[in-house]
Length: 162
Image (cartoon, rainbow, N blue to C red; front, side, top):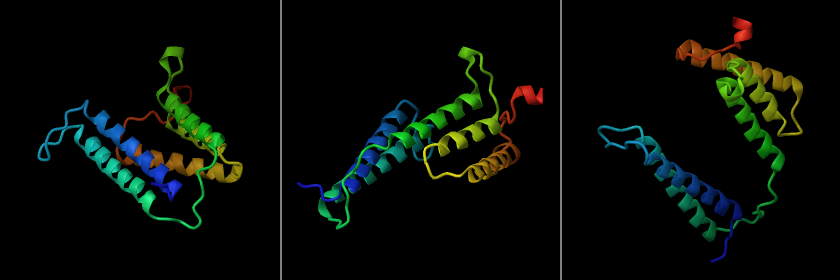
């Protein structure tokens, strides 16, 4: 069999692997039944559905042919690094890092750091747009999580709030 659409093949393979990973990870939780769902029911169901969709996309890559289909190019290391790094920094700033004595620095600072680090993934970002995006995400997250859902997030660093 010849792969006729490399993009479909590799994206389907990715969906399948992630779906299987979710399904296997969900097995460590109580699954329950449809009437009494446990904490592992939804991740298991989501993983199985994702794996089935991935298998369908992968098999479809063998059958159809795209005239403008391109082969998968080199890995874009810059975006990959900065997006993963931005998420790690967000987690550290939001929750702190007790092992080195770093206290939680709050939701607002974590979101601003996330946005500014993630925009380094592209060479086409503009500073003004980044500032506006960070502001909108901080305000939106505050309204959603703190005001509406009443989640106990530390919004500001303790050195500001006291």
